[in-house]
Length: 179
Image (cartoon, rainbow, N blue to C red; front, top):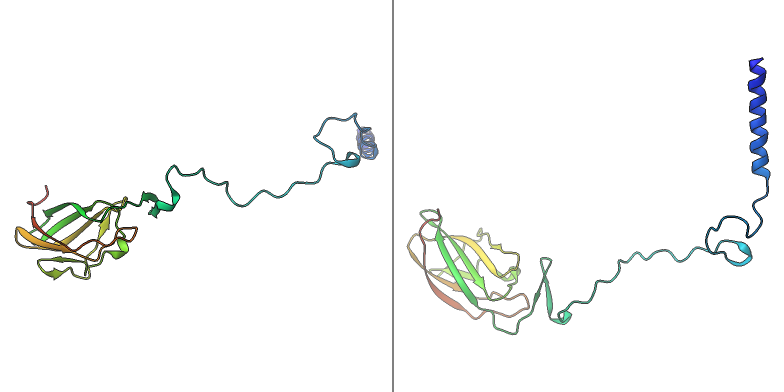
């Protein structure tokens, strides 16, 4: 008999589900509120697809025509000539010196080549590696110098906005080895 009860229960549930599926929907205006309706009670058509372009950034407080983009940082162009503000020379070994040159504005790293810098009248080797700070106003590199003084000459280096540095000749005293 239990098999008969199970069978009767399954048929009852099936008939109930079929009746629910066949029943008409609620009368217009009596069902739950689902949002705005278009003509004839149908939902409104979908709107335009969302834009693939991100929203525009707020305007810059500085004039965008005088802004340069450099490694993700903006540097305003300055109407002053490119010049050196500071130099540092530190001995790192018996014959190696680390030179640091600080400029008054950002320089274009592509304009710095081994032929642009001479030490004691000789160009730097082609294997010289130059390091720049994030702002772009400092160059660091190592060179072979055995004496405690050297003559540093720079030319053909450009600021990031294209200004060319006037040729510079400096006499540097090399500080003792870094601790």
